[in-house]
Amino acid sequence: MLYIRHGVKQPRNPWSDGLEYITQCPIQPGFKFKQKIILSDEEGTIWWHAHNKWARATVHGAIIVYPKPGEWWKDSVVEVLNEFVGSGGQPKTSDAFMINGQPGDFYPCSKHVNFSASLRSLASKLHPISVPTKVETRLVSTVSVNLLPCPKNDTRACQGPNGTRLSASMNNISFLTPPRYNILEAYYYNRVKGMFGMDFPDFPPYVFNYTDDVLPLELELPKFGTQVKVLKYNTTVELVLQGTNLVTGLDHPMHLHGYNFYVVGWGLGNFDEKYDPKNYNLVDPPRRNNVAVPKNGWIAIRFRADNPGVWTMHCHIERHLTWGMQTVFLVKNGHKPEEHILPPPHHMPPC
Ligand SMILES: [Cu+2]
Image (cartoon, rainbow, N blue to C red; front, side, top):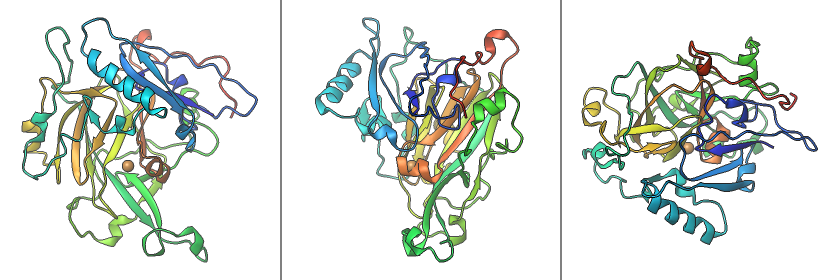
């Protein structure tokens, strides 16, 4: 069993991020593991949930950090809390689809509207933001549903369209979770060899009309791999997530661990690297840790990689994550001691 706190950045402390085979090995029945939650500037309703297999569907709860009086989450915190308590269940799934507490409003109807302008936060002199204006690391990743051919003589395992198996990927890599060890410890103790690669592509390996109505079948086949993207400490990152219409276009609620990011733009169709950045909101963009890539559209996020560690990014739809819609950012240490990953806790679960 593993736990993560959704939206808690855990500065320099990936040890308690709780990802099976990414930041630790699972806690076996009868064993215990104390997780340290380091709150920094979080406020509002955040949640924790198990992060192995699909256990989060039943093992989860809320953490409520009350804002100081008069601060900007005051109203929405109450709203979210009431809804959550009233439901008797999980915090509503639209956690993934909300922009400042408003699901749906921004779902666009036309391909040519400038959506970036409708993405705003309550940034003000009192609540300043620090969206990176200069980007040092530029990344574009497709998010796709994929198909795999049926293994021979096993038609029962091939309930996907036309007798295939469904899969998913980012930049055409369907993420393989390491089977026994975990990425964080492998990196920290320098036992990387063969455990994972550092070749997550900066740009989509195939360039095509991502959101076309009909796409060649051969593009539906992903590669498999455990590839991380290495980021220099404190580099400013822009990541454009491009939804594709491979197999089927869908909304993908993408969640980044260890960070809050600014959502600077989004739109329908294919991201246009010349035209679209002109409409970015760099004045008062919303700050989030989870954002929906709109169906057959794109979203642009920015953050400063100032939290060293091993942090995953994945689609929060269980089946897509299981199919491999995931990647990992390995953020290196800075020069100063206070820019280093904290030492591991004494009793990490054995692998
Ligand atoms: Cu998804």
